[in-house]
Length: 326
Image (cartoon, rainbow, N blue to C red):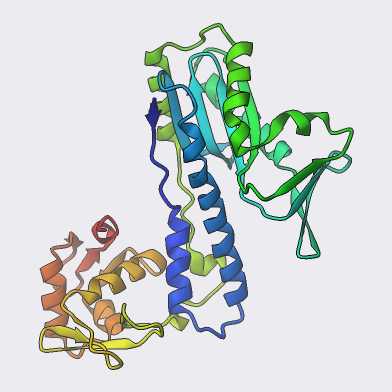
């Protein structure tokens, strides 16, 4: 069994930084918090399924998470694609609490939580579109026609799920996490003719990941925020409030607590790379970190050994290597 490890979406990290470096009173903050909550809930739901994947077959199965592929000038994204030799299975994963009602009359999902009703797009329609686009991509890649199955998985075990009595597809396609093994076995019994060899399965995985384009938006643009509004400086990692550290005697010092550090500026540069720019000049470095002199700026940048372009005065440093650090 081959599994591609599911990593937190980059947008979660970006929203973490945006919340850390935006004013608590900013009028867009409630929207940022809600977006952050939604992405984290989605990731948590996908992570929770790892427990149930262990009940699936151990051999000749590939797991391709969070594929995002362009088709017809638009992207479609699958939470999880499971590749077997006989069939493909798309999982649309929903981590929703409360009471869920699937209505086939107008194709909507109604969630009731704490007495409040919300309407969502029907995930059955979402996964149907994903199947349509995936089939087109497979044809373009010249793979043999292989059955594509679809499931919507509700990962919150406490969620109550009901369907409109006439919504037959919902009865068949919407399940709780614990039912995944049972449904997978049903598909194995339904599709017993091999359509892909092991070599073709690996080739398919490779081709799809070549087409994959991760969702990586500029979050300031997303929320129409001016980057000049963001809180600058090196933030103390030990304080609950964002106290700005100052540089003195080759160390960063917090004015609020005893914490000091020689490398605290690295985290600030990661923040810069995530929500402002992946490149930085000496002047921008000095301005963003509130450094007292150009000589200190040059020393700290050179010590990071970052790749750069340009001459000394117009040099621009690439911050992307910092994002690969733990």
